[in-house]
Image (tube, rainbow, N blue to C red):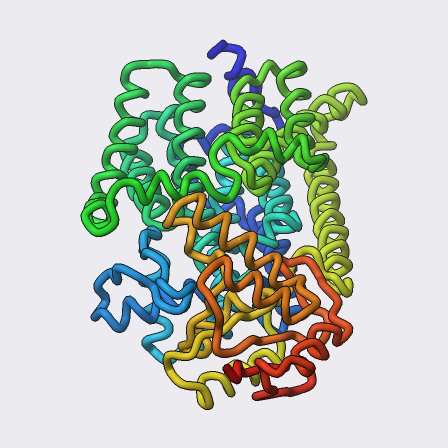
Length: 527
């Protein structure tokens, strides 16, 4: 099996302008890669420009992350045990802390939380394109393969959705660290490079300290790299050094979390958000585009007997419920497929040596055209009324209403907030929401599901009785209810409001109007 998996390595494309030469495997510097890497970075800049142009406010939410960062600052840069504002009891702080410290420093220096959440993810997202390029380049021994993979990552709507959006203040950097660790792992098992071991150890530690799911992505990738492309004792030992070394660097946080919340907190979170092994359910739900990595991997398995990419694609499809991991792997897969198809096509048409430059030029034209097409598709998605890729949780009216709540309500006031604006509400008001799933995963699957069900139900209520009934199942009655007056989102999906709920509150003697603007109305309990 190992010999089969080495097919690409043993028969590289002969054209140096396309393949980049075998010097890559000896750690060649990036001087000759500027054009190809620049193509990927250019596609990334295009995605960033489209996102910023179509999103005056951050897509999705980072309110809980902002609240965590502020608590870190308030604790003198120590770790807080709980984060207030999200449900009556608050939520345990058990998240890996690295990126929250970065966010804390930026906020402590005076950064506006909304602006930081809008801009910071771009830094991590663009940085992640570099290890993507290097991994595909070295695996296929081809610069165009690296460029194609990085372009595919940059313009994939799923990857943009989860890494350029506000949550990218954590996820974009976790993706970057994870891909850097995997690239280092490839170098370790191919060359036994000590520098790669050090780089992999540091990158894996950074991943562990950023996001647990991305850390699992690294672990799965390392096991497959060793099992399919190496299977030597020395390779296993070097991979173990990376794993244990990264774990050692993350131990202070792990020890603090275990001492503060117990080990159960990790198992509690593992059962939420699809859990491990949820990828099969995603496929069965009809996410057809996630099959594309498997199609490309099947081609490489049949034509090149490339077992690693086939196993890597299959593993990410089955282990992770989130399609973004399958699409990340698929970007590398299809970069390698493109190079193999180009090599075979040039061999069939009898291209002479002088045609090599033309082939490189054609590859560049295809990449640029692909970037333009991908950018056009992103523009289309992000300018739709429903905006399925990057829906904003905030707008001017929401921000104004939250400013009023911060200034004009008692510090201990509690709110039920309908719609996704709830995720930002505690961070922008310093007030408590009673209903919302954010951070509750650390309290266990039952608590998380209860809050999630309540949040989705109350956000679709059309009567005051419905709101009161749902609230009573979670944390009791609230002092205020925040109602969007126009179309708003619930977990990113658009919901239209035609005033039915507002009129129901107006007719109730238990509530009175406390604040209103064009997009939001807030009612205060009178009893």
